[in-house]
Length: 260
Image (cartoon, rainbow, N blue to C red; front, top):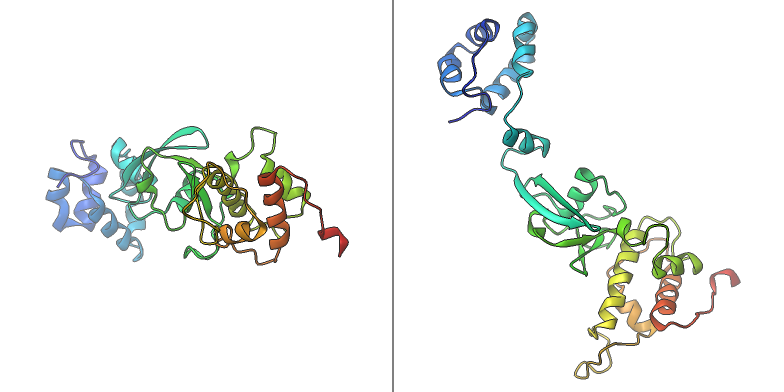
């Protein structure tokens, strides 16, 4: 079994540390290296206070650099990390992630793209919606490792620099958000919805699913159905539908929120 510190000379202090605290592992460590099992064992000894008496040797040991491959894995917080490469908002990115890490956690915790929110974490609220290869997906149910070579768009990549996407501008105009927690998922879903309609993709309430035109003109009812996977706990649904309808139809929709 190869350790992280194999093929290196141990100092006298380090050998003394192993001899005093881990005598049964001394030969294995010297021959094969200091591995994770040895590290955990050493840390368990720390709770007894014995380690304090060997502070110098411990500092030297823990200061040893890891090999690049192991450093990448520990950076990801896992031992058996997998490398995944994809494009996020137009920028190519490579990460070493736990095979079980969701795309949402990779975006938020590893890339600091915190616009995508973790709401229910069960794929029921839509707050985590992003687009993968132009299709909207629930990032809390999508494994990061499954996005190899794909193009991911989050709320941070919707605008063109300082120029808002028409959906974003329409959400502001029609007051399509209140607390704002669901808004990033709502907007990503709405942008993908526009692409679906443009491509003639039908939904559960499409009147004639056998007739698939090049593009669909969506009604309020159709928009509501297509956005039903995105929950707004504040209840801004009429305003959200109006914002999407205005962009999708290309016609101004009367604002009603300020008439209440």
